[in-house]
Length: 281
Image (tube, rainbow, N blue to C red; front, side, top):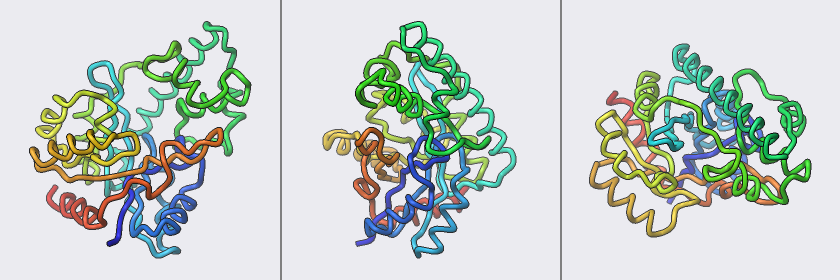
């Protein structure tokens, strides 16, 4: 049986490695396909696709769009998008500007809480300089906090400050999940709800199906076995494509976040299901 890992991040967003390295790790894990799904950017896709041709592995071009519903972050994955679509690129750029505003707001709250940190210090802690079409987010802030000794681990940074229950957490207005679904479909892609077990908003799934949701990430590093079974039944109820992904971001503070490439995988036939869903658009 050949498998695919359909959720991974690179240096283009909050991953720790170049896109080509994700592809190499997928080959080393014995996978037949790997998706690159950076947050609100497609900047790593050309490098990944070139690496896929070099290593002889299928690379699924993707993206993970940040949205908000019920006051909570909801992420929508898009597969087989036209990553050179000008309207789509413009829309992603607008999302990155909101993300930048959020970063500044979080830094302001951290400073008010007696945790001094500047954007310059966050950027200085990065492995590589960020390009205009790449994203910077909470993991980068957490990494800078760790390097400055404000916290003892990335987990502590999120638990105490940056997570949704953290003292410095902010969530400025963003697009709704249904809007992201529309954007993905406009770009010729297939929209899939990422890690629904992290939200606890199951009622949202039916609403998003009506907006064009095509799949659901049933198997994810942060899902329990019970959650996997629960969302598998929901996928069957709505006839959604079932996907899986490690949500690999690389290693920070000696810990792999969320899990290694290939640790959560699905039969490669699902890649064909996504292609067929794209052809029906």
